[in-house]
Amino acid sequence: MRPLRVTADVQQVMERLTDSARRERAWLRRAGQREGLRESRVDRLPDGRLRRRYELALGRRVWRVTTEDVAITETTIEVVHRGELAGPRLIPVRWVITECVSAEPAEHGTDITVHALSQMSGPGRVLHLLGYHDTITTRWLTDQSCRHAERTAAAIAALFAAPPGPAAGADSAG
Image 1 (cartoon, rainbow, N blue to C red):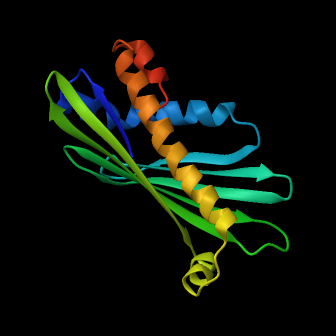
Image 2 (cartoon, rainbow, N blue to C red):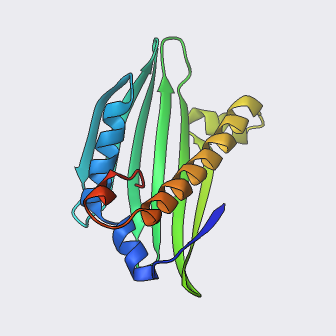
């Protein structure tokens, strides 16, 4: 969990955080800067939500990642990041990180809280539930969820530190 406070009111915060066009531009810009990224694309869902997909090649192994806005309300955004590591002679490792950004009115601004929760999915989850404890993957997932929360909170802070205008589309939130 990562809390922060911004000086904008809740409505302004949610309007900026849920702006699909801004988020799509920011994601495509970041994807273009990443080496080894292939098949990156953004799908706009009918209700304004986004689904982002890409593959990241690391040698003979490939990460397939999908990030999708699951729910957007007046005060929250829930995003699910699904990933799979695949490669030759490798049991696919699948994971899910659920990230929730909530905004609440506060004195002189808005309190924003970023929560991120990770868990294994697929065959790895079944093995985990059967008693096989893969502590390396578990630690990695915990670290990843913390990084997601920190990155999202930093991007939101940067978004509201910058003056609104043409440069605001260059942020990395979303």
